[in-house]
Image 1 (cartoon, helix red, strand yellow):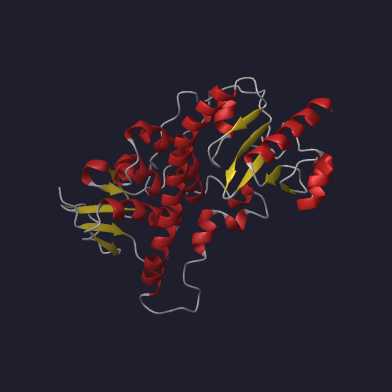
Image 2 (cartoon, rainbow, N blue to C red):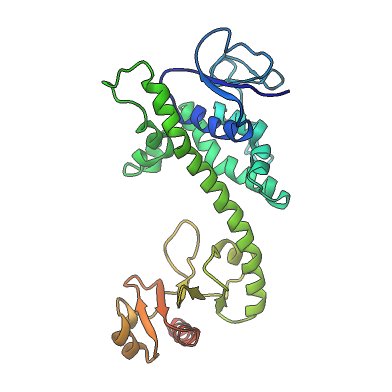
Length: 317
């Protein structure tokens, strides 16, 4: 069936139907996006995808609303705890469930990564939108300082203010917000695919490193998840080229902490150029962050020397 119309509700908008529109406009670029509450338009029919309006969920009829009762529920994971309740879908979750894999293919995500990226995006991006849209999670759970920076809250900033009263103010704001939402979605997918490419390179580098406490990578890339997945607990530092210089990075103990397996030597903290060369004895040492989690040198030889000194310092503590 050829899709000619993408139909969602008019008036004020939220993250779920805006993000749904990102998916659908990518898959059906020739379709007309319609924001309306006209009964005829929000009734299923040939050529239409209807979402976040219509009070029905029927994938065969191409209608994906979640405001009716019973509310559509996400299937429980196989490892769900006893008594755990299923989470409600928003329109974004329903659209992602049915169209997400096709969307990833449209972005040319390799089939090798497809299911993993789909699931990762579903859990980390779509599910929070579903929960917040249904009132099952409050933005304040991100913390009082971060609540206003959640994606739904940022999207809310793109809506017209109270005294912007033109008849088409909501529609114009929705269309202006759409490319911004698209950038967030596609940026997230791009990062997830890049991480999987990086994992392959990091695993190869871990094998090459053997028993060394220093992991050398061909360029800067995400490395912590591969280090943890391979059980490479002996690794303390990572070195790689960075522009015309080389960088020495610490490895964090986990994803929920800034604590490192081993900090860089205290004597280097905050030093640059000649002062760092004097403190380390390494010609070409250029910079060490005051937080002792990264240092920079002008050559591979210099960064290797700094890394060896850092390892010796860490093992002597």
